[in-house]
Image (cartoon, rainbow over all chains, first blue to last red; front, side, top):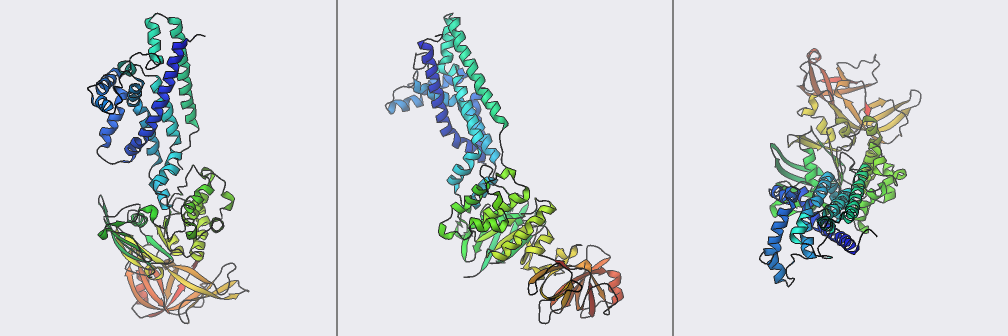
Length: 226
Length: 363
């Protein structure tokens, strides 16, 4: 077996982190994307920019600020301590929080585009057919935005799998707790263990290719609003 | 319960202001007629609650839907309206059946006045039920859209230029279905259109809108015949009349029609298979009516009626005048040259003969 127990532990941890992050992002990203797609408020610009920040900031910058916020003197750290959760820095929870922030734009933007593309008309049609706002969202918006949800989930998951800098800053390198695949590869390279690095890097390469293939192949048969 | 639709609407959007106070009959088809930008679609959207006017009072057959003075606004999904959009706007993720049942499922079963079978039958869409919207032609999709609106058992049906996005053959395909709705269902309809032929064919009541103001509102026959409205200015000016089929001449295949009024004037028309006793709607274009001093029987013109001159006006063409005529209680319009008017020495009360070159049967 070319991957040892540490490698497999890192793979499992990465899958767990990416799945949880994607799930959380779908839950909190949907209302944010819906609001961004439909509001005329002046806050739309500032909030949209904040959500998009991780696209341009170096991961170390995000990691640095998160470290401070999550740390024992940061406002999130104070809150978690007050709630009896202790400090979340260098823990799996901390990694999830960091990943949610870091991958946010990759979930929010596809959703926002999907919601915008639906336009006003289907909502008006639904209203004239007696559907209230929630009813309309569940029975009209969600099905029509399905391609957007698929894209958002794939991108959110894949981007979380691909993170390194944020993890290193706030998670450190604790086996089975915070040591994800990208960190494990870094360790192998540091230790000059190139064969192991090759295997793990190869797994990542194939995975990433397959994810993108799914995304681009899936885009073709897309049906829009008629 | 008063059977009428009241809509006082005041709304400003940029440099457009809508300011109308409409009283529409609570049954039959009321047309909001005007050019694009006249505010007719805004009126419709306000009635449905899709747009919120800055000040509004809306009452439909005794029920108040909106009263901004009391801060009352009934949410659009709580208003019992059916709305037919210009484009069919079917839900692409649902089959035709899914689209039709969308509104139907969302009303209490006691309120369902139109069954799926009835709506399919009225609009001829039963064979389409399992199809996806993307596989329908424009005309089919619009018929499904109309059926979908009917299946929510609306107490007011709003139609926003339902034929405007269709080509002429598709229009001809749908118009008979709209006439059946008119004849078979007792749902008041507000119909927005900028096509005079559609309005003449379908509407009982006409509201003429221009730049956010209602220039006129009244029964279709009276409103189309008014000389003081812009409708009378154009080449398409004409009147809508009602007549009963009273006889059939099998030798020449002609039908006799009697226009409304005691001892109403008679017209003879050529038309395949009319049933004696039915009431028909006719349109007589002003340009198809000429005037003569005497009943000139030596002519190929079938219909000559004794008329009295009421008044006349200039038109958009300086060579023409439009004359309003009284044919035993029925109003006719004649578009003749100003030269002819002088030759006839036109004056109010003058007795003349109107020669009607053609009569169009509107369904």
